[in-house]
Amino acid sequence: MILSMLPESGRVLGIDVGYSPKRRTTAFCSLSWTKDHIGWSDFSATSDPICRERALLGVKGSDEPQFISVAIDGPLRPDLQECCEYRTAERLLSRGAFQKRGKPGQTNAASGPQLHKHATLLAKMVLQHCELGIAKMPFSVSTVAVYEAFPNLFLGVLCPEREYPQRPSKGRGWTDCLFPLVASRLNDLVRTLLPDRSFNTVANVSGHEPIAALTCALTALAAGAGECVAVGAATDGYIVLPPLACWGMSAEGDRWAERELREIVRRLSRIKTAPSHPRIYDGGELLL
Image 1 (cartoon, rainbow, N blue to C red):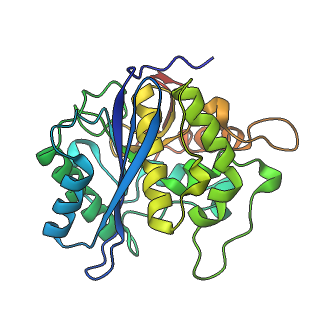
Image 2: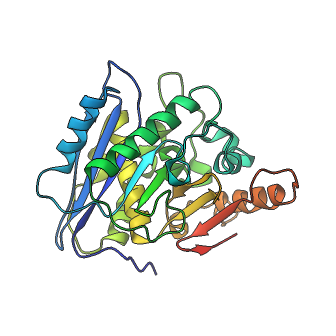
Image 3: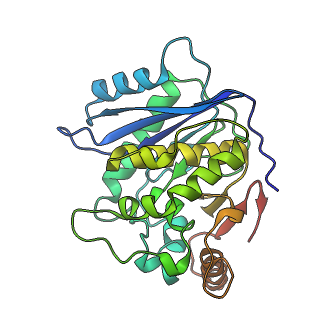
């Protein structure tokens, strides 16, 4: 049984990071709740700092309570340090079955440095303009509750192995393919973390950026509740995933993603030249 640390009313923030100077590919989603209802709202922006600031202030609102936590889709290092390297979380989630199921890119390659730069800038902007709750989980990147999201696999680990889609065709991403397959499971997650409240089904959300931003907000909700899995290392950061109890099953009746992670951690832990020791948290406790 999940015992959430969330208060009777509150809100969290999710940010899908984009860096286009012309298109509104950065999306902000505020998920809020009272004792009776759950809702969310979103704003979007280009990479222009003024445009982003306006969107953030729009989703923040005036005279609104603090965000309990924020989750940002982009590489974040502890204390928001900027350093482009192949991180432990990326190594863990790029092996085994994850190789062909929406693995994270490397912070030190391709678009990784840009994504890391903009995720860090957005995290600092949130710290500048918003009041955040104190971090209750050991895998926050700050003393306040700032977490790293990765929508591809937040959705992916919810999906039963036999239902997992093939690699998306050009023009579609993993998040877009997985979202309709696990929308009902996301609804179940919301009901579990925030029971006895009404809300519109998440399946009504459409468009890549709104879907990704909502998934980031759900990541922040799970982290704020203390009910999530975090994969990575203390030296270079963690990626936050849904609660283990929600993960999809394999044909053999086990959680396929947990099976893969246990084997990957076992193998990486035996490599003496590995840059850092891989860890997996289940809530606030070490799972591996």
